[in-house]
Length: 278
Length: 300
Image (cartoon, helix red, strand yellow):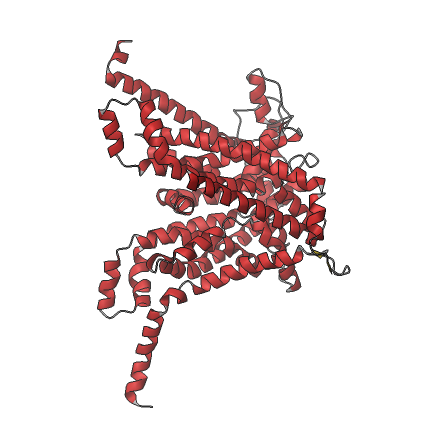
């Protein structure tokens, strides 16, 4: 144990212990995903064995059952339309709002938007449901897109405030001295500069709209049902086995995981800006 | 109209826009959020004073605070408040402690740093319904992999969410798994923005790592810790997806939080007025706790 007497040796041992602990944390965090993928690739006999089957020939039958047998592509299309439209509209309304908050220092407004995060979504859902039913808007894209704005709009505003604040004001002043209007400067100078922020904000907004369960559970119907609700319904009707449930879970999560990896570097900033900056 | 004034008009219009940009730009978003949040809250408050059902056949009648008085006598309401409290009191402290430990593990030279950070994000970015489904499979008392692990470790098999006493702790376990990474990342951001000077000064004075942590890191981390605490408390109280998919509030009403109970009352029993008053109570509770945590932060 002589190396423990040297400082470098102690540091190396320390590092080794800490890295092992970190690996353990990662194993725990990732195990459910690994298990989900394994389950989705096993057949029913393997999945109902009392001792977990770790080695097996993977089958794609579960995926085939979910996609072909359950109209999965249709629900995916619904989710896609709703999340994309809610994100697009969120940008349209959110970008100018975030810019104004950052430039004109509208602290009160920023705080108010943050407060809307405290309110449980379900509190809005009951009134929405009554209003949309009387307008005969239940089971329409319109109702779902509008309600999903409650997720995408604040998300985009919080993320973008930080990005707009980082743009040096000199740049805008220079453009305005050259005769550009303030709004023109916003559109032609500022927006291109915050594109990385726009991508991050859009992807985060898209993910959280895609993940939304509660609104679609009540406001969607056979024509507009989104993937999370569709999958929840499969299991309540008991029509899907272990492998099928896992395959469905993989299929819902896959797009979200891919998107989050694209903006991985910025996503931490995006996720924490709502929490820490408040 | 003369030539000059028609040229001046667009000029004047753009100047008007520039001068009023501070409200024109956020205006539409504010209006939209107002219509989507404040109006429903007011409507909800009105509903809570009515004895109203969804079906049009039954006319609604004004009952004043009647629903609220009924709530106070409703055992199922008190049960749901208790389950919600239990869920939050198990999940949030565990997330703060584990999140701090993980943040400390990450706050140094870590091999494959980018990959580690990407992987750590997965639980909170994944679709909650998918997460709930996979945990439901793992919790399965006969075939779930968690019982297999318990047996391999020589422990007794558990009923997990099928056991009345374990349903809430098991659901809290899912919440801990899902949200500890967010707490870790928030705290890591706090650790990395700390000033270097106090640490250097203390090191020169010969402080041990233990002293460095408790005397410098810990006090400097307080604001970040409170931010994480506030965020998680509020979200834990509102948890819906995980509970609804894994247990639907069961067995019986053993894991029925206030959120889930209000949902049942509104959308399954169609007692709209009563559900609206339950939701007002939920809103009051969440707000009270958010304000309480903030007051606590001020006094520190």
